[in-house]
Length: 284
Image (cartoon, rainbow, N blue to C red; front, side):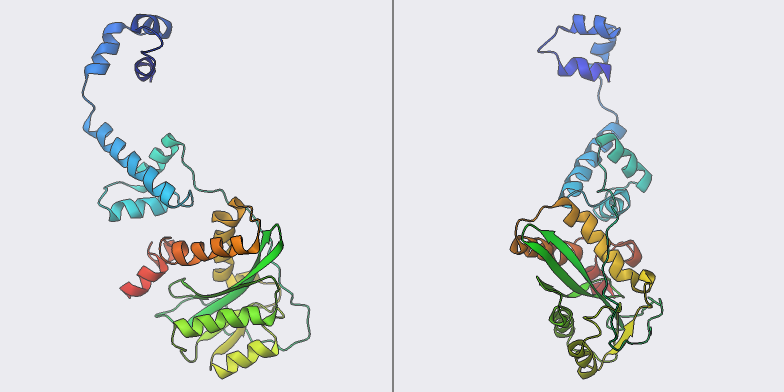
């Protein structure tokens, strides 16, 4: 490190002065400068450059586990420990996790579905089990509400809807998108929490007419809808907490890009063999 410092400041200070101040010999410095970098040093330099490139592509969202899988897929022979060490050396860290509040209006007298899913998230193919949920996004204009539908097999967000009001239409539109994109499959278990939107007449009619199997979490049990909770956690940590939206339109554009441009197509998931949702579906 001392030799590298001397080399970087050659224009400001003579070599002799730098060597004296840092208590190193001039002969040692010249020997270091004239020596060829080792194979390992060259390998680290190349690896560092690719790590920085991928880290920036992911907008600081990916840590060593995901980056290692991408690097391996690109032909870089490196372990997760090595990538973690290089990231630490480069001062790169994935975005820190933060807690966020999930709101569910379950204090109502509307009918609810039984907990058919019952925390069994296992699947063998797409369109067997879906999960839906709602979260809110702060903007300077007020809240923007986001409803999603996720296929539990691939973790893909197959339906979504955004609005400034948290009405039944919000969750119905998200489910309609999912049905359209998946060609209206029948007998899919559609799991949600007990929110009033999911207990509304409009939503229940859509479930019935689409021949889906309605399912709802137990009251106050977030683990019953863990996949949806996990998606919103990632969304908040990797995007929303890093932004200050001035308008709802700005937030909508940002959320669209995250869901369709990044999450479904670019983000690797440990639960699906470190593939992206769409890549996992194509490989099935």
